[in-house]
Length: 364
Ligand code: ATP
Image: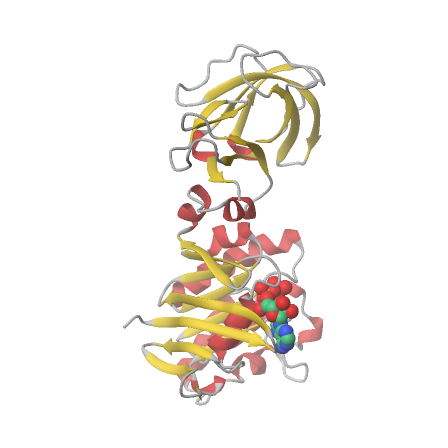
């Protein structure tokens, strides 16, 4: 039996609307598992079921191998008996308790060892000097750190986090996220975290569970999810992509980067090839030599947007490589390159796609 959390064949409905449709997930001890998916796909409902805030209608839930919820028998162990730590996006600190009291609140027996843990945690998360402050004087980032310590203080077997960084501004979020991740790794607790931010999931997770409309559509490591998406939906979660659609001929689909093999889709069937914006490289040298594994084409810059850390280019390329540009044989590529690149509109560029960032799927 798996340690950590195991949810098996969970179905859940609000009235006549089924919001979880046969969902099974595992959040292993010592690992951070992210539930990733668009708004309304059922992530929070799954987390609330794990916490015991929602009663299981169908399926089973196990924590550390012990059944805590069962649709058949109606078993629903109370949240406080599950050994879980919970943290929601609004942090929900008690306004009438100071930082130390908030953190100590859930500890039944405040032993010297637990006091030492709180002191070390306050130092570790950089909020020691606020131990006697009340929540309303803390910044969002400080409140988040205190809420995390409060959730971990009773030594839960699993920590459930619902969008824990969404209330923070962009500049603060990266640092709080990194500190939180390091602290969680030191604690070694199983973590199940809900997010709709793919970058956050990539950064934090050991294991990503992608959900869509109440179902798990892919589960795997961040690398598997990013580089081996099982569908266009999963691929596009990580950002807008270039789409090339057509009909499969001789096991291939024509794209501006040449014919792309699609052995899994029969000839005559519609299909799509997707290329990530960051999977396309650009050289201002019209005769740039590209790696032999990459397909290349030549295009003209339409316009460029500087985004700071990266630049977003629109480039006109022939729909079929080797042919000239014309109104009915051109396509606009959306490309993101790191750093600042601002070629003049109309400049001729060499463009090539990284094969690892090209994906083919049936067009349904
Ligand atoms: P978000 O990222 O926006 O929080 P989510 O993926 O966490 O979305 P849920 O909050 O689990 O999704 O909601 C799933 C579906 O269930 C949504 O359609 C939502 O409107 C519905 N829902 C959630 N809670 C209730 C409730 N108590 N009563 C009725 N419908 C609900």
